[in-house]
Length: 498
RNA sequence: CGGGACGUAGCGCAGCCCGGUAGCGCACCUGAAUGGGGUUCAGGGGGUCGCGGGUUCAAAUCCCGCCGUCCCGACCA
Image (cartoon, rainbow, N blue to C red; front, side, top):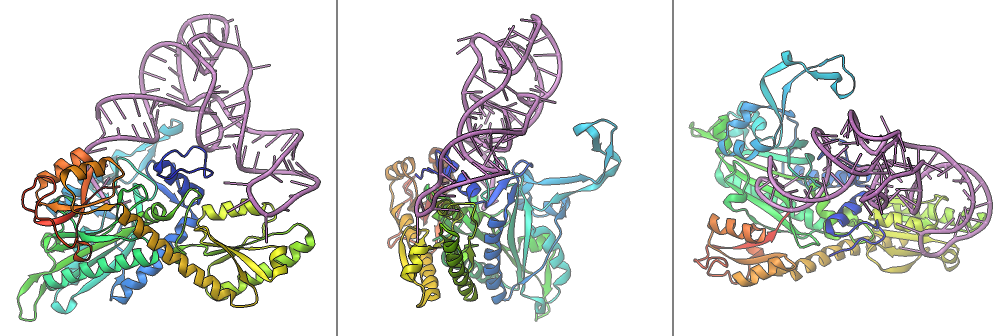
């Protein structure tokens, strides 16, 4: 367990540590509205970089962006039975359109105008399947209109009981892809294609290793045929669902009458997929890499990749050092490096180090009189190492090389940590011991029965994260359920989750 | 909605038991010195002590009511 020391003195456990990192890095803050989050510029920049990378991958696979309304008629949500059951308990409703003055003061100064009640309440979207497939029904007539591959960057609202910055807030930002296909096989391939894109993004950009697989009945998306998920292990050994991709089958097509005419002339329902990742990934990024000094941002998603901190005493030194620092910053920026030159004279260098470390900057270049005399800058990595870099030879290359190494190192460290906290082929006794102890990913045989899942959850708090894809499966899949010892139908990965 | 705790400066808290001028740390402002890992010193600003009522000469403190927040559970990207 991590212990924040200097971040703030009050941090005691992982949750507080996490909160401190988010606040000290200036990623986000609580808003006056309960359960809602303000994303500050530094945090929002990470989201922009995430958007840029993902959006490029979606477009490269033929997807296009569109935008659908925030408000969904209540009746739309009700059309798909499982879907409404899944979301009914956590929606915000718009029921009126006007307030009126009461003549009183303070909070009672206005009240709802009862004459403005809507005939049908509007749901603030918790997800957009219903409104999007209502439109798909208008747009899709023929097999020639398929596949329809859309994505939306949007905010959604889910009225959760308990919230936490980035991980679970009442309103959050995400992307939701929605596609329609002529065949089940195409829809399945699409759901899988997106899962692979998500995995690539999370591993190569976020340096966050994930295991992929399919969700059990009890954990799948409300209204889906099948849900695929990516699961990452945080530093407190709890799992984070980092994204999902659903094969919706024809459930929504039937509910919204999305039909197309085949080449042969018949009328068929389309096959849908939907998939999404959210600002929750920023929380995952924090909980995967950061330490007691604050955020550790993987270089590919770091808002500031390199910070230059000049060091001086006299005005003369200040002039010389600033000139070199500024020139280095210019060279790096020209090479596409996101660089910041901290010329402030209100802070001592040490204070600047702490500030930029808390904000996660992967590489700091210190430029002082001693460095100039030696024709070098001192490069300090956020991950700890310090080394001089020559000013006259290949500085830019050395910096970009270091950023690459940091990116790779973060991924390897996270993967090693995950593997160190995974056990395979567990027995019931080992499982109980594991979950009561440090926790992590427990791989074991699973009979597939919901009763076992429910019992395990009640006794240990652990849930099936995924039935893992072949590349994550143990070499020998256990023959019996680790809990009830009935024949195993598959291997499952259990963990306590966020 | 069930169980527990807490509301005092922007943030974190002490003071409450035992009523008597509202405090500490951080942050903020001014000035000087300092400057290779959170600088130091001096000065300064900032509060209807969650809200309402009661007891009292006197309430942050005691009593009653309300409101709010957080934590644990159920729900969850």
